[in-house]
Length: 294
Image (cartoon, rainbow, N blue to C red; front, side, top):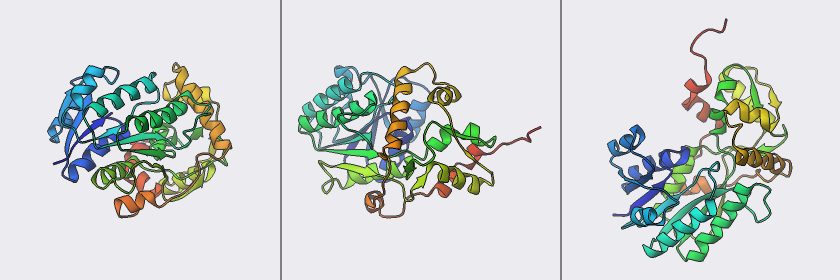
């Protein structure tokens, strides 16, 4: 039976990837930093939990022992991504992995204005140089962005630091997880490729706000704010790497680098992708007030 290592198993895609891999009958090992209630929830699902730091070659070597495939992701707010990728690639090489599914960025390129996005481009090349079969996931904006601003939406505001005409096709992490599991199950047609992944419908940022409002029965008007204001609403104002990343993403939106549609995701999972309406309804409790506003 194929055994799969998942890094970031408590993140948006990692957590759901664990579930989808288990559904397909894979053995799953999760690499976490500490033993807490989230680690216990993984154990309760039947996941083998190991502890370690992705910046430690020793830890990663142990985590990859007897592993066949891996889903690799790393949070954008953390520094050292290229070094982490080198360590992971070296350990994967030593353990003769058959596949790495690597989470990248839609706009990954050598001249990215975002250090994080440029590092993802470099990470892609690190894995390719290792000789391990790899598939890169270049995902556009996740539908989970709506959850990040749900505390605003509940009160009738919709604020982002992007131009209102920027085009995206939001992809739900749940669908991304299904794609990950599908690629682990049947990777051959996609190995060596950087898959451009999008949700089923393109919207301008302004039209997306209107669609969210329609589903929730709210009159939501798109409001463009500064990156500083946006980060303050998320409590991330003290993370310079996030500030630079969102500033770069704003320019990427203006240059239409996050737009596009495809059928790859639906082909891999063998069915339709989640619409914005589906996503809102599945997470409706996050967007609604549970007490009257006075």
